[in-house]
Image 1: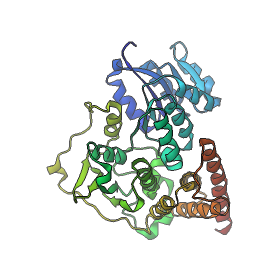
Image 2: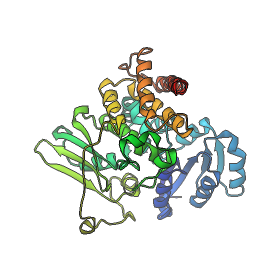
Image 3: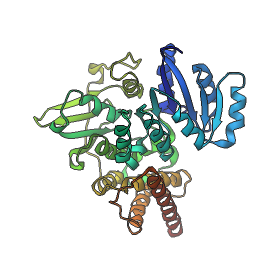
Image 4: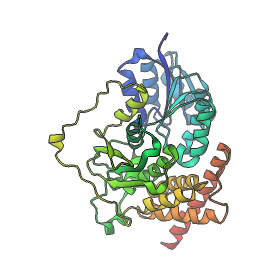
Length: 395
């Protein structure tokens, strides 16, 4: 499509991907969609690929390639599957790529895109948590831009436009508190995946919604803030804000606080990255402050949200600690979803994994390559599963 902007969406069938597609489809003539990727939701992936006229659709699950080929038959859209196909899709020339694959699986495609100087809209939290210095160095080396898509980091990014980062005194990341925020602390141990998988404000996937309830998502975002903006850990704060209207605040050396307000709709942060450096019309609700009337803020409880304390340890340690933290967090969530551990056991598994890994490697030594990050990730996952098995023998 002559003159159209070339874009790819990695993780197209997830909530971030679907919100991105919603914006793109509203002005489809402005975009030449290169690649859409997904996992097991073949029908949705194929339908969107045909609707947007993508060059290629890729499923991460190789066994589903025949299903994807059947769904795309006669459409002119290529079908591909597996890790190598994801990397090949990231190699295809594009001006802008949404990185929204959940988990460590999103690391390699993001790195590959940056090597081509592509602008990376980063919704994959794991990239900065596990390999922040490497990712930022890759972008710098190839003249690529990374634009944050998490609502909190987009808010900080916008609050810093025209400002000197040296004048920043503090960054405050807000948190809804998740779906269990009003539960008595003593009841949390009995929370089921169904209980933790319901969110009062945001429409997200199951895993991120449970991470919201445990505040592991916020723990990840604290680490992301340190890595992306280069802010010292003791200047990064989090506060519970039940309304999810204020997404972040930037505090400056003169005492001023710049707050970013918006509805709890991910299309705002996605749209800011999609249209950057301009602002586009985004079909989100407009705030009526008189109707909202009250905005609440209160400090998070360390007992209710132990993940936040673990994130502080990770930020202070640096090095490989982020990769271990993320791998253990993902594994602990798998254990919770399988009902092998309880809701409050997830943080204990992460802590046990960090402790166990510290006897195997020096956590403060940063991985030098993406391959080293992925090796550390695998060792940490194996260690976390061992911790889960140990927990099961004791209960």
